[in-house]
Length: 79
Image 1: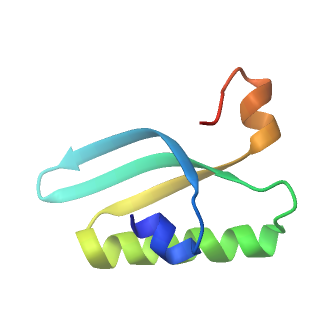
Image 2: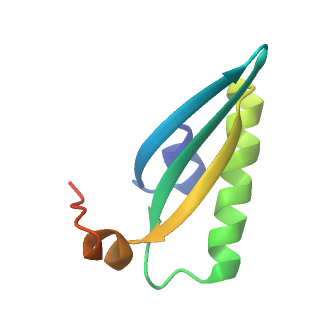
């Protein structure tokens, strides 16, 4: 929900891991971005997502960026 609201479009997220260290929570996940998105745009989006997730949940997020072709080349399917 946070990612869709922040990006304005449907994004494909996968491979979530939540880590609890006492009162500190971290989460890692992967996001599929369009092939034509520039590095500058991808960086701006992931920074924005990081801030919004922290603001709304208190969770520190590590976001791994993948492209659709990289994901599919490694056997993944997007539904």
